[in-house]
Length: 189
Image (cartoon, rainbow, N blue to C red; front, top):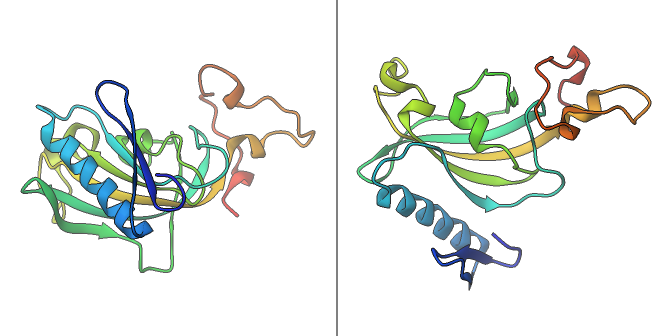
């Protein structure tokens, strides 16, 4: 999604298409429907489908980065958004998480990579990347595909937690993320 109510898409032939909408809300709603259409046209959803709704600013997040997130989660029902099963949008507390820590479902870990502060993204997550065959008691039936709209409100990059010289090498500079957790002094602002 581009500023000034433009959305840019690429077709199967790599052709670039831009569409201008009358409002940011209309552009976001259209982008959500594109993601849902992608899901409905795939024979089998075997990975997370992501659609940026707003890009945000700054550096994209990676494993080890700490985030504060506002989200809403729906069950994917009847080829679209079904019942809301969880949300923190109108609550005082944001969800705090560290990417790669395994504290959230695998689909979130994968689907949020590359997001930027202020960014919003729609994630469609197949059961194997969510709660699987067990579901979530009383809220998510077994083998449910889930849809989340996530917004990154705060970011604390893992490299900001490294040594005091400001020149420390972070996991961002190496091909594989470090398996060593960062210190407790790296909580969100």
